[in-house]
Length: 183
Image (cartoon, rainbow, N blue to C red):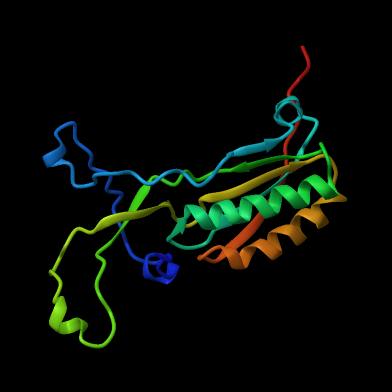
């Protein structure tokens, strides 16, 4: 079955609910969906930690939202591919939020005559269908470190293309990290 539209989940106020129990009868969530994000950090982490990548651009959320893990993975794949072709080996890229919130769906029949076959159940808990990361205003989503100011134009263009894949308003912050003192 296809995924439900993201707008069904995106701007709902939620409390992360992941109740699982060692006793199967008491666990509301029977199975946890698999993680769609393959890697959370890519590129040259050693260069970033040693201070060789001082220019840091961060995409941050401007509003409360749930970002599904398949949206984060689609954006991650595009960003990593573009960085690898434009700046090979000269970047550090990190996906910051971790999708931990389990999304649920109460499946219902639709179509002609479905009302006579299934009336549903009010306030039903639902089956798990996916995971999402809950972001709040000013929470970072993606962080990219690059070696020089010339590459910021490339990264800003990549972020501009990725913005429509995410369900919330975002903005880009840029900063220059100082290299740690050499001892």
